[in-house]
Structures are given as structure tokens and as C-alpha cells.
Length: 213
Ligand code: SAH
Image 1 (spheres, helix red, strand yellow):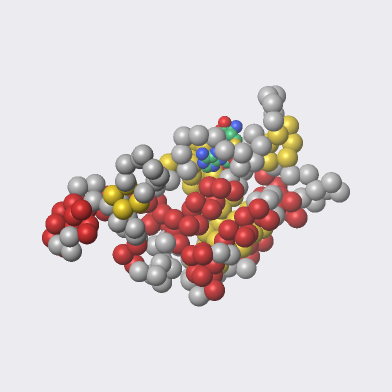
Image 2 (cartoon, protein in one colour; image 1 turned 60 degrees about the vertical axis):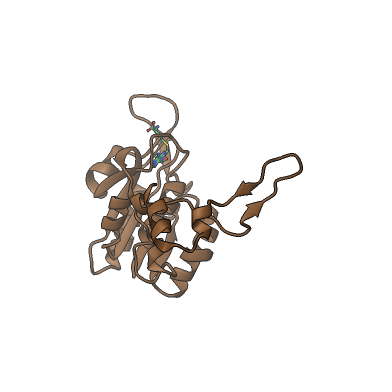
């Protein structure tokens, strides 16, 4: 089982996603477990401050190191194995299927979701093992990246997918069709047909066709 610990200021937006479909089933089968930790809980001042202005100036707020440190410490205290700690950052390594496969070998993964202008750099320097970006665009937080990682990593755990063949590598992916053979989008429009080869029942030809993509 892989346990994911997601450090986020907005756990409620994510929870339902992890409780449905493949991830929900994987949790019921105890193949994965997704925990949400709102690190605001670890901010000790009266206002539970998690962000402040950046040193050196500039717009936007920066997430403070201390609440994140305390949250990670609390998780680590309960674990026997050292968790893999990932910080989401636009400057991180670009996430791909290879990284997903590598991370699926860890038993405990902490995902730190940034927000606002970003996270105090000391989290990257002293707490995280690696920084990951899910692509060259800027999102408002690490929450969607966390869902992307949880899903892509979980698919590598035997039993999470109904049929392991669904775990195709990107290179082995090909277009798929289902009924009807011929879809009529409307009068005066051409029909949308399924490629004939897929209806042929000739498995050699079908494999060849799929191999072209
Ligand atoms: N000012 C920062 C952007 C901060 S976005 C910059 O220009 O780099 C706020 C947070 O969202 C980031 O700290 C990071 O945790 C998350 N985030 C935004 N885009 C992301 C992406 N493409 N991949 C991973 N995390 C991302």
C-alpha cells in the first residue's frame, strides 16, 4: 500500500475526487490511502498565519516554512520508513510516466502544495527530496498537481486497475472506438465511421493498425 499525505490549505476541494472511481476503489481495497493535512493547523499564532510578504519585496504572499515543517514532522513521527517528500514548484522536474513509475516504489509520499506566490525556498532546500512541475504553465496551487501525481502513481500498483493492460505506456497507446459502428451526427452531414479494420476480426491486421500510432 502507498500512503499519500497531501499538505494543502484546501483539502475539501480534493477529497471527493479521491473517493470516487479508480482512486476510491483503490482506497477501499487498501491499495492506497490518501490523507489530507491542512497545515494551517500547525500555525501557532492566534490568527493561524501561513503566509507573509516576500523578503526583498514584490507582489503576492509566500507560504511560511514553519507550519509546513511542523506538519511534515508530525507525519514522520508516526512512520517507521522515511517518506519521500515532494514539493510542487513551477521550477521542478517535469513530471512524466517514468517518474510516476519510480515514485510508485515508495510506501509513504508527502506532497506539499504551494499557493499564492509560492513557498519559502527553505522548504525546497531542507525539507523536500525533490521538486516537481506538472508542465510549463502556472496554476494557482499544487492541489491539481497533487491529484495528477496520486492518480498517475496509483495506476502502477498491481490491482488498482481492473485489467493491468490498461496501464499502457504512452508509446503503446492507440485510438479506440466503441458502438455504434456508424454515428449519424445529423441530416446533411457525413456519417462518422469506425475504421473498417477494427470491425474485421483480423487480429493481425488490428495489431498492425494499432502499432501505427
Ligand atoms: N510565482 C510562482 C508561481 C506560484 S503558483 C512562479 O512564477 O513560479 C503557486 C503554487 O502552485 C506553486 O508554489 C506550486 O506549488 C503550484 N504550481 C503552480 N503551477 C504548477 C505547475 N505547473 N506544476 C506544479 N505545481 C505548480
